[in-house]
Length: 245
Picture 1 (cartoon, rainbow, N blue to C red):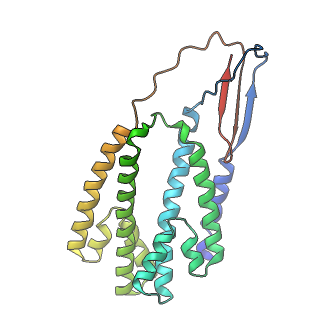
Picture 2: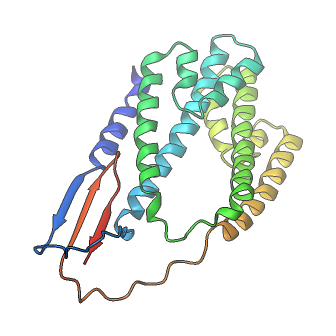
Picture 3: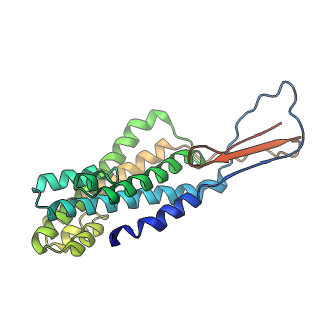
């Protein structure tokens, strides 16, 4: 049960970071008023970043823990790597390994963080350009795939060489920079290959991101002539919307 202790404070932090609030000013809308949603972005950027970071950390931990758990259970290398890869949905690999308590907690925490991040996507300062979607998401998938395989590869090699769970987990964690874990294991050619491939794809992904997102939106005009306004926000299952007339 000790390995579950870190999940509880994270879960509570996520729950209490998703408040419900609303505000309204007096005044009634004109009969012909048609609400035009206007998102208020700045106040939610930090919360979005927090939840996106939580999803990333949960995926990395779940993948590494799952592959080590599979190796400890005596599974073959290809099976262990597949179980680790399945933990891109945190908790799935743990459930395959028979650890349903940790698997359920990881899956629930990832669901909360993922829903929040998705609902808060509107707070980005740049507007996505759909014509660049294929190249952008393909580059991200390839970049993240290289990172995932590098972490699983390094963890697997280290555990098989030393049979040390903690050492294997830290070696895999180092491969968040692909190639670092392989260097720790003394696999220099693999390290160079992973690092070179990751740098090339990361440059491509950065270039695609520049095309996918437009320039920041121009500041909106003044609102001194507003007669009334309202705003409403519910997270994780809602979104903040504001309107003015």
